Length: 479
Ligand code: ADP
Image (tube, rainbow, N blue to C red; front, side, top):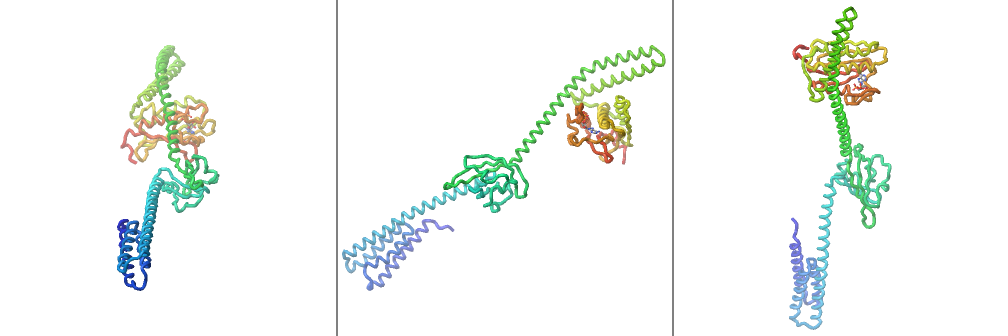
């Protein structure tokens, strides 16, 4: 239990009084042996002890001692010397009391200053430890003198591990010495690479402030971990890039929609003219007229088909609409293959397809899925251009989760590694005349169907692109 100042003083006071009394009693006992002057000598220790508790107790003890001595001597009658001695004792006693008082005040002031210092130190330590940035104090030689709790958390070192070590021990393969980093002029900010105890590194910003203690400089280094900020900046950069892609895609969508609108009329007119021409060709009669009318009929069908594609594209771009129905995959694949190969006569491409049982009919928009297949087959053909062996395999299978997977495999050189991770992003192409939107549009279409699209590298080489669709008949396939 702490002893109060007042209690402490009283104890000294009582002790002084007891000593004074004891000295007085001793003096009485040897009254006959010693003379009057020595009585004061015996009293001085009690005055000095009383002085330890302050002015009042010293003064009180002096008065009591002087009074008792005078009372003792007055029985024999006091002469002038004894009176003078008594006054000298009183003066010395009061002198001691005054000096005790001064000493007491000085000590009280020093105690208050020490307490104030302790409070400030605690305050500063709490600021030092709770500051969000890591704080390190180093001396003029660059040696660490203080290390905040946040610095301990940031670097993984304890204060005791780094105390007295060079500041550069906290940096990753430091190129500079501490004296290069520490400047005597104002605050300076440095971008450095920090190294944690576990040897991982991180970008950091260090602000170095200088202070002078008894003429010698000392530095406070405030360290901020920049990883989070740099990551956010990178994320922001990615988002900006994505946004720019989206805006380009939107512009492209709007352009496609406008083109679809503009081309629809001439295509209808072409189909009408072709129908007229076909009727005229039939009217001519003869063997060649049948061939001509058949060719014109096919041309008219394609013009109508082109119109339908444009209409669907427009609906898809403007409203994101798709026309879902049960679609026979063999039929779509055949159509897509004949449409692509019609434009590349003379090329020796071997295209085969293999429709597994239970993977024949899907729920899809016929024209859009055909468009996806056309994109994939065309990409495969372009990749194999100039090769001796040009094989394309199109297959359909049921996946474990009940979806139907359509795969287009080719014997080309495979997906170029530089685009592999961004294959389905718009405007990614390795072709000098490519737009880089075929796979991106294919992905949009497949996602709108609730499916997925991805590319793989088949074991025997080449490239494979797969996409999934929902089956029209859930039950049809048991295994
Ligand atoms: P584009 O055909 O206009 O380049 P795509 O989005 O269809 O745009 O294709 C993007 C890129 O993907 C192509 O430039 C090509 O590098 C690569 N790619 C796509 N399919 C294949 C394939 N079967 N074999 C090799 N590379 C391919």
